[in-house]
Each structure stands twice: as C-alpha cells, then as structure tokens.
Length: 317
Image (cartoon, one colour):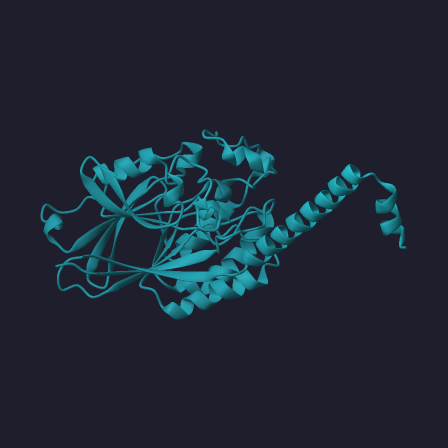
C-alpha cells in the first residue's frame, strides 16, 4: 500500500470523501484554467455585412480591432495581428485598451505596423491610459461597478502611442469628429474618450459646406466602452453605425448561455457581436468586439475566443 493510500485508509469515511472531493475539484479547476490559458491564443476573424452605403457605392471593408492589451513576448498575438494586413482592409478602426504594461508599447507598434499602412481611426480605453491592477474577479459580478482609481505610477505611454498612430495617418477621435474620404464615400466620424472613466464628451459631426449633406456619406461613431448613455446620444444624434469594445465578450462565458458580465451597463446578450441599438424609435447597428487580449492579471478566456472583425459595408437599396 502506497503512502497516499495508507493515509486515505487511516481517515474516516467522511474525511476520505471530503479529501477526494477537494482533490477532484482542484483537478477540475486546473483543467479549466489550462483550457482558458489555451483559448486566449485561439484568435479568430469574425465577418459581418451591413448594407449602409448609398446606392451604387463600392463595397467598403472595415477591420475592427479592440482590447489588444499588449505585453512583451506575446509572439502568437504579434504574428496574428501581422497576418491581418493580408486582408487589405479599406479602413482600420481601433476602439482602445491597446496596452497592458508600459513595456508593451514597442511590441504593440510592431504588431500593428503592417496595418498602419491602411487608413484608420481610433479612440482610447482606460488601459491605454493606465495599467491594470490586480482585482478580485468576483467584483465583476456586481451589478454596479465603479472605475478603478489610478495613480501616476500606473500611467502608460499613451501620448507616444497616439503620436505613432497619428504619424501613420490614423485619425484621433478622442472627443473629436473628422471626415475621411474612402473609395469615393465621405466617412463622417465622431468618437469619444473612454466612457468607463466618464471622460466621454460628444462633439457632434464634422461640419462642411451647405451642400455637404447631399454628397455620399456615412456617419460612424466610435467608443471604447458601450455604456447605454453613450449609445443613446450616438443614436439620437444620427449615427448610422457604432463600433465599441471593452466587454471582452464576457471573457469567461458559460457554453450555451454566454456572458455573465459586460463590465458596464450593456446587457450581457450584447457582450459581443452585431446587434441593433434601439433609441426612441431609431435602430442603429452596434458592433461590439470581444477583444483580442486580456488583462495580464486574468490571462484566460473560456467559451469566448479573441477576435478581430471584418465588417463589409455594401450599398443599400
């Protein structure tokens, strides 16, 4: 009889059952963590099609990136982001949370280098400004959560990141609006600073000539965190499509059920994917990305693979 068997034999029946149950639970938890660690690198491309462009317009392909949370030595993520340039998108939209550590800037810019050859637009998330801190994971299950408090020691190199994005020609939409012509269509953008930090201020839409409304155009809204107030003022002010991230798709989901949390007031069934946001009789397509990375303190995904989204805009009737 081995030492472990002898130990079990010497215990009472109840104690043996408790010990075996605990061992099984530990093994099960280890298996779940192992699965979650593996799934965080199972990157996939989701595709969507929306008929939003004026009649006769050519298709326009938008690559939506969000929540990269870049760290050094994330080679699989770097190679996958590089490969997305092979899609040759007409436009790249980045909805924030690009970093997870101050030393992640150089790897991030390397990973996005090929994609920055294409036109782009971006808004920041809280993890563009501040590094994540360890948290009790059960705090995310609260119905109402408040943004974390940050100190100067948490600051990330976002000015250098924004400067690099801008030098590549990507449009900074931090509480700003701007137009960009792409394939004969004028794209009117309006973006906000991170609603999760209560920094969002809607700046309206780009101005133009008296006849600008008659030219072929599309109004695109960007936000990192899809809080309902943010979606409402976008929809109520004429947005024709909204892009957001932040939710990580729930990150740890229950198969067959979905997300348990969104880390904002968005309903959990909208935690990832394309849906239509309803506001006072207005219906606007809302694309929420499940994100590409995770916090470095919670580096797992369960039933929620990391994603980029290729949205093809086509001409309407």
